[in-house]
Amino acid sequence: MTAVLTRPSPVSAPPRRRAPRRWRHRLTVLSFMAPALIGIGVFFLYPLLAAVYFSFTRFDLLTVPEWVGLRNYTYLFTQDSVAAQAALNTLWFVLILVPARMLAALLTSMLLVSLRRGGGFFRTIFYLPALAPPVAATIAFVFLFNPATGPVNGVLGWFGVDGPLWFDSPEWARPSLVLLGTWAVGDLMVIFLAALLDVPKPLYEAASIDGANAWQRFRHVTLPSLSPVLVFAAVTGVIQTLQYFTQAAVAASVASGTATTGGGISSTFGYPENSTLTYPLHLYVSGFRYYDMGYANALAVVLFVVAFAVTLVLLRRFRAFTGGVR
Image 1 (cartoon, rainbow, N blue to C red):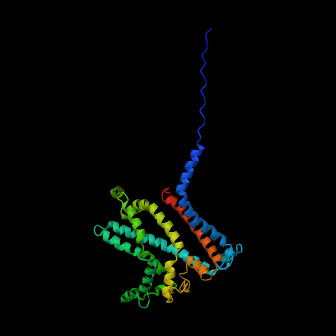
Image 2 (image 1 turned 90 degrees about the vertical axis):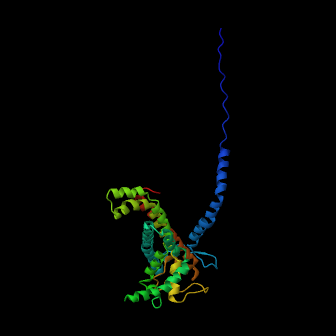
Image 3 (image 1 turned 45 degrees about the vertical axis):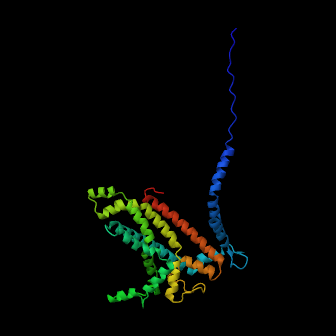
């Protein structure tokens, strides 16, 4: 009889323990992220949650917060006419100031790109206003546009034009702030300038060979190339303008002639006739003049929600314009 040889069955290897190694990897990553996570939690999440909580209370920084439910929000949306005026002023700045700054920055950057000589000098000149502190720049503008002694109305008088009251007029105070914003447009100009210099030259050459004029080259070559930068400028501009505070506060205080120097909150915010009272200014006055911190937190929460919603809408609307750029 022949013996039948049978192969011994291989001994199965013990399963690898990947769970401890995976957890060590996760803990290592988490330890590197810990400083950023702690900063986000301490300086963003906790203040946000605290603001939401205090918005449902009556709080004056001196006594224990008293829960009042939706009373602050009810007063905000149904009784506070000053908040409605401040919101309309802020909306006006968003609709006028943001496009004006973008247009001024784009035109200035296109002018600098077209220069053959002295480009570096003129770039410096156009960028310098952005380095001026907002408070100092606003004070200088108020004095330049002073209806009685300012040089702007003096120059207009040489041509037989009666200059307006500028910052002392409810109709001209907000346009005057827009002029201030378009004057200090160097920060945005630099971004547009870098984007324009990055547009491929062969695209312009091909468009010229096809017979495209200057407007067609701008419409079909320049704008599509600048679309991500335009979206960035629009989104950041809207967010900044929703928080418009310093220039409006300083202009109102200085133009009224009763600016405070260490004497507390100015009582002239919004001068003249609440035309320059923005939503953040009303929030500040509610919290730090009247010590109504609960209502001020309700204003802050509404501002956060509006800014977040507007940002989402802009990103969705501009997605088609940017060709799917995210």
